[in-house]
Amino acid sequence: MGPHPAVAAIRLAVRRVLHDLLTEHNGATAAPPHAPSHEPPPSSRLRSSREVPPPSPLVLVACSGGADSMALASALAFEAPRLGIRAGGVTVDHGLQAGSDVRAAEVVLRLRELGLDPVDSVTVTVGRSGGPEAAARDARYAALDTAAERHGAAAVLLGHTRDDQAETVLLGLARGSGIRSLSGMAAVSGADGRYRRPFLELDRQTARKACMVQSLPVWDDPHNADPAYTRSRLRHEGLPALEKALGKGVVEALARTARLSRDDADALDSWADQAEAGVRDAAGLLECAKLYALPPAVRRRVLRRAAIAAGAPAGSLFARHIEEVDRLITGWRGQGAINLPGKVVARRQGGRLVIRQG
Image (cartoon, rainbow, N blue to C red; front, side, top):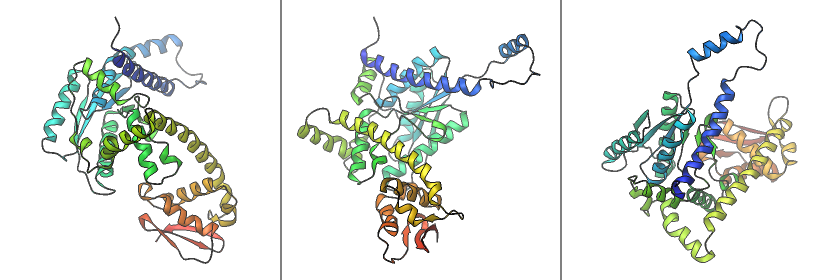
C-alpha cells in the first residue's frame, strides 16, 4: 500500500525539483567536451574519481514550522537521500512575537528529527521600510541568502502554495501593477536560481493533510489570522468573498493567470533587452524619438531598467513613477524633471532622456 495521496503529491513535487537540481549540478561539474590532450589516461582518471568523489549538492528547506513548510521539509527528508542529495534546513526568527525564540528552537528540533543536517536558526532584526510585511520578507530572504552561502547550498526550497500564488496575484491587481506583478511568484527565482517553489501547483489543504497523516506537529502563525495584515485580510475575507460570488475555482484561475502572465512578461522583457541598445546614442543616452517608436509596454520596461540602473530601488519604483517618466517621451510640453525613489531624477534634455541621481 502506497503513501496517502497528499503525501504522494508533495513528494512527487519535491522529487521533480530535486531531479532538476541534479541535472544542473551534474552539468556544472561535468568535464569540458574538449579536454586537453595531456590529461591522465582513463584508468587513472577513474581511480582518482573513486578516491575523491565530487560532493553531492546540498538543498536547504526554509521552514517556519507551519503546515506548508513542514510538509515540504518532510518530503525533502524522504526524497533527498534516495537521489544522493544532502538535505538541511533553516528557520528564521523574526523576533516579532513573544516566545519566537522558543518556536525557532522547536522547529530546529523537528527538522533534525526528520534527519535534516545541517539545520540553522537565524535571528533577524526587522526594519520598517515598505511596511511590516515587506520588511519582514526582506529580512527573511537576506537571512536565507546568508545561510545558503555559508553552507554552499545549491538551492533553498520554499513552501509557497497555489493559494499563496492566488493571493499574490490579487495583491498585484489591487496595487494596479503591471503584468510582471500579476505573474506572481516564479517557480525558480533568486541569484543563480537559488530559490525553488515545488508547491505552486498544490493547494494549501494538500500540505496540511500531508502533515496530519504523518503526525507532523505544525505551528499556525497568529499573524496569518491578524486582520492588521493585508494578506491575512485577503486570505480570510477577500478570497472567500470572491469564491462566494464567482463560485469555486477562483484560486486555480488566479494561479493560471500567473503562469500566463509570466510567459507574456518574459517575452516582453526579452523584447526590451533587444530594443534597449537600439534606442541609445553613442554616449549611451536614451534617444526620445527612438523611445517613442517603441510599443508602450516595451518602452516602459526600458525606462524602468534605466531608473533602476541609476539607483532607484526596484521595490519602491511603482507603475505611476514610470508613467510620469513616460510622459517626458509621449506628452512632452516642456515639463520639468521627474523625481524618482532613491533620489533619482529623470529629465528631457536636447532630445535625450537623462536619468541619474541628483
